[in-house]
Length: 207
Image (cartoon, rainbow, N blue to C red; front, side, top):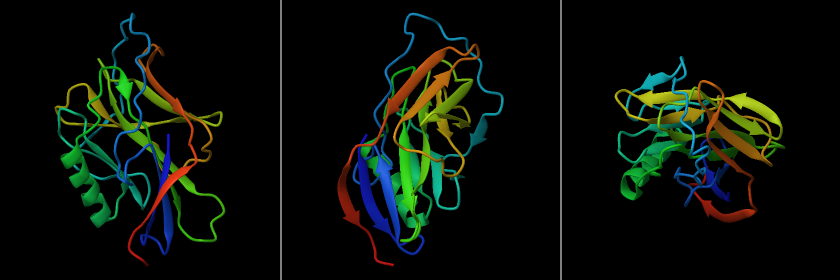
């Protein structure tokens, strides 16, 4: 998982690190390998899956959002919610395509933000999309030994895929494991990784 930096005038001078992305856009991160391919999942979607409109910005906080794009290849946007940057990310997805996941796989996106130069530690955000034979009952992220439960979203009429996210910034970054479970607690899909040294830096508009 690589970290790429860009500077934006979103809040004063903010530094944004996108994990597993390309050119600072919210493209799909590395996919998880299928887990338990010889067993059938116990299908039961989570009871609190939220149905969202196409391109509806689901806020992680005031600055970061996840949105789903109707498509056969699981297009989505995960990143800054400011209008110009959000719509540029949508155009990138429509131009370059979504992750086109196989069954029982998920993507992982991470984003770190420093809102002001005096901030000691970045705020970290996590989300992505899943595609499974049947909807997961639960998705969690274990970050440096602490477990967090994701919120799930899906488009009306979408078959077998949707998004997940964790509200607001979460603490920790060195090791992240995201796991999707069926209703009996068996693993459907998972992703595990940590950041590599910063690979590139791009500069956006000055404040």
